[in-house]
Length: 147
Image (cartoon, rainbow, N blue to C red; front, side):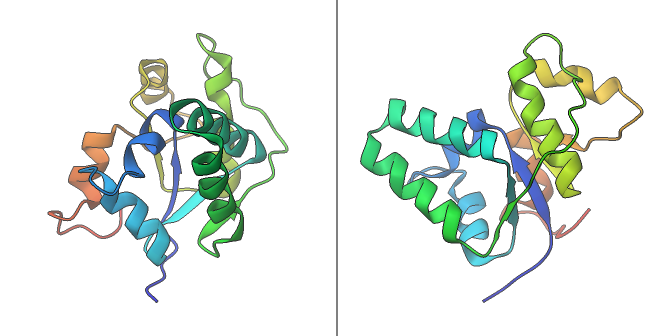
């Protein structure tokens, strides 16, 4: 068992791409399973994951993914006590920022264009990565293991 405390929040648009066994991004889910990454989630994020998996696959697959997330010791369940409201274009995306800040995560990974405004904000500082940037930073070919 390899454990670290590299905390990451993953937007739903990326999370759906890391589950498939043949996905080129599967390394992320494998690192979550092994404890090399700690996935930070809130109840709102879990509900969105479940909803998307039920829509894209079926209820059984969705339930299995959520059950894993609920029992894995490498999933950090985060309670949100403050909402930052940093994304006005799609307020639903704010749950990922709130979780990132509440869990003291190092990475927020999203391919959603609504997040691009976050790069211009000085406070609170958010380390936003696209999936490609995250792959370059921590992926299997990377020599970097921590920011």
